[in-house]
Image 1 (cartoon, helix red, strand yellow):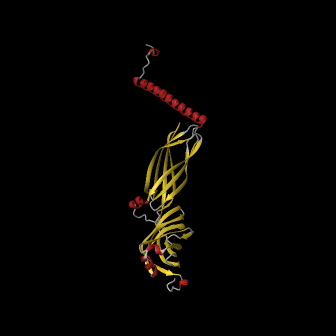
Image 2 (cartoon, rainbow, N blue to C red):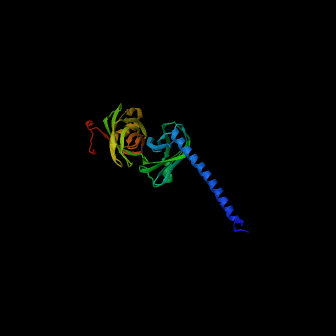
Image 3 (cartoon, one colour):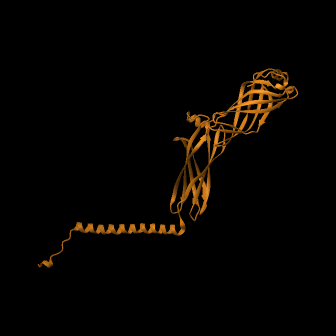
Length: 316
């Protein structure tokens, strides 16, 4: 048999391997082409229709109300939607912490819709209850100012991109208010009679907070020897430094004859017990506050006007 007539010998294993490689290359190439095609189509749709990722920013933090019991905080979040269709705001997840310690957290579901090619300011209301904070963290004292960090996760559903989370953070400070101390240091009578008595209450106000108070208005009721002599109010601005003391003169008019002989006998003396209860309205670096003033079981001096011929040797 001639050499040219010899049959060609082919290894079966090698032939199968080649076939698999060809098949694999063909299949892989096809899938890659499909993926590239889909990617290109997505980009072209995005470019043509104008889809894009929304943006968000904390545009402001307000404290519309604050008292000894709680602070109401509103976080303004500005969200911009560059897309030609409205996008739903699925959830708002928020956390307020101080020095890494959680003060409050919450979730607001189905928070609305951001208009196409528009922007919306979403308001997140938060309430901080000071008793809860003090009971949890005993080192946080009334009258102090604590740092806080607000963390907000906005979850939106955007065509092409799918569900996205937009994380936001903002820091600041918030006070834990404390009521001021009040004392009636003395009562000076301007006009002294059984029919009508005009007196000046010399009040001492001590600010127990680590921030300034701007006294705008004071109203109160006063008792002398357990007898209410009436209400008094004053609208006069008086600054009170942080952890400082200020003095206020509060006029009051009453008729001793309406209260019987007990009050009259007390007024004829030189000292008496008193109770004062009321409120002060103040400006603070954190907004306006209404704070209570209370003093029960106090003792004050009664002083008549020098024009009445009385000694005034204990005048300061």
